[in-house]
Length: 275
Ligand SMILES: O=C(O)C(=O)Cc1ccccc1
Image 1 (spheres, rainbow, N blue to C red):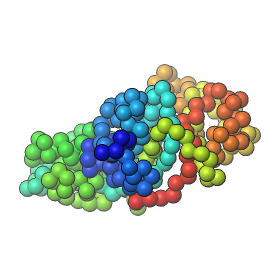
Image 2 (cartoon, rainbow, N blue to C red; image 1 turned 90 degrees about the horizontal axis):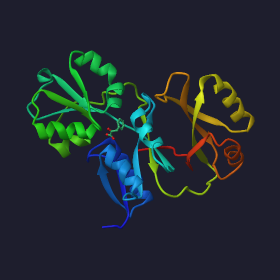
Image 3 (cartoon, rainbow, N blue to C red; image 1 turned 30 degrees about the vertical axis):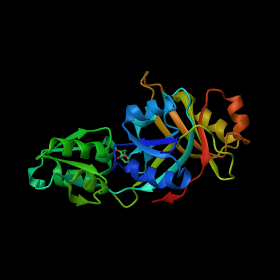
Image 4 (cartoon, rainbow, N blue to C red; image 1 turned 120 degrees about the vertical axis):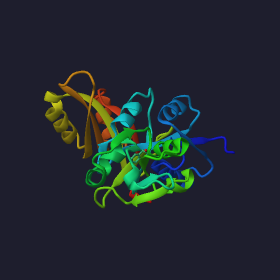
């Protein structure tokens, strides 16, 4: 067993496990890979029991994964050291012997419900949707409860692990269901020449245009913006800016010095599409 542990949003068979196996086998092949639930994952990162953790932060169909983002910004120290972009495919899984007509409940992660909304509306509009902390947790629940009236949305790979059968496959909306996983680690990668930095700021809505103009004037190229409620009133929001460049290089270095209100969540190499 390696002395280094990297962890991912589990349990086994989650989409995060597919991404983690692919990412860590080439980047940190000597690390032991451990599945953890959301609480344990963030606490393992804070206590340094895990050197790295991997979980999804945004998807092309659902946008920012709010519940993961809130955990991430709650960390006292956070360094996104990599992004890992992967297409994912949803299957509908149930216990052996259970037919689609037996179903009353579907379990899954909230993002899975968003990404399969069209399919669910067309085929299972009357069913109860119950949220779980991950797609594989939904599969684990069905196995543990030997459920006869429930199914889950999960990777097809989870069927073998939890002894479930596939009722339907590739049921997501559209062909471009890209999930962006992030890896949190300890050391910021050195500038590679093709880097990206994730910045966070809490901005009063009336100051947003001014802030954008300031980024542009500072020669910072904005690649993406996510907005998220602060939970403290309606006239300011969290804004996540994904920008070109590395925080240790200009123009970002100078910008971050001049604008302490921006939190640097990490600089990392731009990743293509994997998986
Ligand atoms: O990793 C999983 O299985 C999760 O439940 C998180 C998730 C949810 C939806 C898309 C990708 C990952």
